[in-house]
Length: 407
Ligand code: SF4
Image (spheres, rainbow, N blue to C red):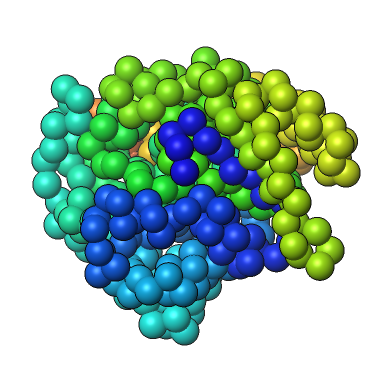
């Protein structure tokens, strides 16, 4: 598979689709070309950010990884490992149980490495020193299996940001203090992704922790993470400029975001599952070809609907929350609580914005969420506090304000 190529497949047989994409991409030849032997140490990095099932739009479907493992085995590769670390606040071991990855690894007799327990090394990543888990760096060939979805802080997440699962929790917190975009972009220069298979089956196009999955029944294969993410932006209806880490990664030499030079091949899964193939050069021609697809109209409607939902939701949240360098789990846990307050007509009684994030450490204020705002007059404790705890605290706070208002 060439660097400027993107392979896209639609369908509902996820394991077979993943196998098919690996075969069409020539994954076996790519591994042999890079590693020279079938005994290569192959690492698969899905997105298992928390104990959330894939159907909710936040985590990789185990069926996709099953398809990759089946393909690799059929080609004679046996040294396969799945590795990941869940986000700050959740244990990877709990996530394995809920997502089905624990069961998958056991059933397929593939070792799983919990990167929350891994050692780490400092590495120069195009002029920025970052702390990276040791095990993924030792692998001969790294297969990244991200979910294409929205993100409340970076707008979207796909191949580039999924590598954040390969750094220790302390470094994840530091990434947030650094504003995410710069370190995510630089990380692409520190960990090489050799092959990418994107799970775009039902990603939540609003928030990374899911809850509003948008069925798309699609997978994408790529070798350039920058191109892959640029294409992902076009699929979910946002501009590349809105996701600043794409430009940072490009400037660090991790790939090209130039979609006009991309060659997109659309494979379509038919009823009896032989594949139709369409060769398309350039993103415009790809879009034109998609017009012939029955999914295209539906997909356009999803894009419009989801883009509107993303904007409306983010605008409301930004009005109510003052976020400075918060960890993903902390912010993502707070948002559903704020949404509930809004739905219940209580949010209007918030006399101050809710402060959250490491930028508030050591500072004082009226209303804060998480350990970082521990000096605030009203504080939801926890690192990170869960949604229910924040909701109950904020609800009580709003009800108090409401009674004062009436009095
Ligand atoms: S309380 Fe602070 S350090 Fe803890 S998860 Fe929230 S933002 Fe991160």
